[in-house]
Amino acid sequence: MAAGKFGETLALILSKDQLGFDFVETTGRAKMGKPSLSWGDPALTVNCEMAIDSVMTKFVAGASASMRPVEGVIREIAQSEGPVLLLAERGAGKHATARRIHDLSRRSAQSFRRILCSTLRAEDLEKFAGEDHDSAGTIFLEELGDLNADCQACLQSLLSQRAGNHRESVKVRFICGSVLDLELEVKARRLREDLYYRISGVCLRLPPLRQRKEDIPLLTEEFLAKYAQEFRRPIPALSKETRRLFQDYSWPGNLHELEVAARILVALGDEHLAMGGLRALLQKSPSARNGRRMSLKAASKAASHEAEKELILKVLTRTRWNRRRAAEELQISYKALLYKLKQIGCEGYGAS
Image (cartoon, rainbow, N blue to C red):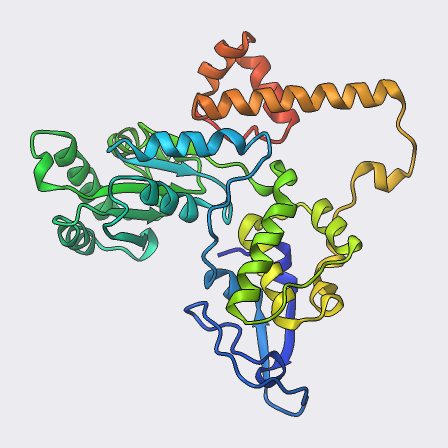
């Protein structure tokens, strides 16, 4: 799984004793020990891509324009019983959102099971659904586009039973996640069309972190506090420079990448060392690059664009990113909405 630029470049060679714990333990729980500053011990490569796989990002309701409506939609979805499709970039919080839906539902006391579609077999899917029959729990199928043909047929059968006259035979609720454009997967005959329409009746698209930058300070504090408690270390007070760099960076690995950065900051206890691999990749804003002052006209234009972006994202979230419905509600043509989505970097999202 791609971990973004930070995960690709930041590989720190440190000893286990210097860290004080095994950083890349697969359970994500650190084994604390007495720290030592000896560099003579066997080296341990702290690989951020591995670390990302061991991180379970908690759902954090943000205050940004693109996230404010999401919590309300999640609460609405949680009270329903049908399948749910979560679409988002890798690391943007599909797993955490699926868990949030489960926790807010009537199934919260029952089991929540996460299954990677790339490793799933049809007989295993039937077994998992059967095991959760009595508990009526939730199964989160991660990366639906990786489901093989046999599993697709099995899932379609299970969903049909649940929606039809055999409702009592399949009680478990399915939530599916994907980074792919599933309509293209259907057209390419890699995904069954009947399965896609069965699973996409309720669809929620999660914004990438670069479209919710107002939430970065809150998310950073949440992650720092989480690992300070887990590693039994003080919460680091980040410098203004680091906070600005966090705000300016595009975070291609999204929430997972930010969480891993926070984890390393707490783990190393040395902001300069932890940030060394990230600083070179941070993208400066246009205003920082040219250093010019902004005129009143330019400021007004920028404010207008921001207000327009906020309104478009609100309507798209309310319509679960159905672009035609959103265009009607915004009272603009479908073509005009596609152009505006391209302007704000969201042209690859949404169903027509």
